[in-house]
Amino acid sequence: MRIALRAMARRVGAVVAECNYAQRRVTMIQARPGQYLLAAGQAPDTYQEFLFRTAGPLVHEPPAAKRHGPLQVG
Image (cartoon, rainbow, N blue to C red):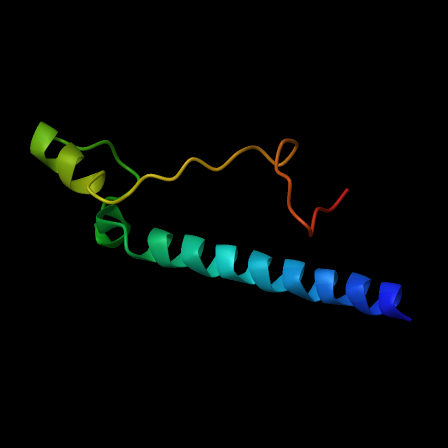
């Protein structure tokens, strides 16, 4: 019984950790300055515009094959 409860607690903890990671990532993506530009898909015209677009924190996200997450698909 204890083993089953521990396994269930680990799974719940893994889901909560994955939700926390996803929420942090969405918040960072939504807070990017370049998100709200009219021509966000085009290259910046000036160096100052480039610096403005990359002003937020840049987070490296590993490829799915190398990610060690609890909710991997495949």
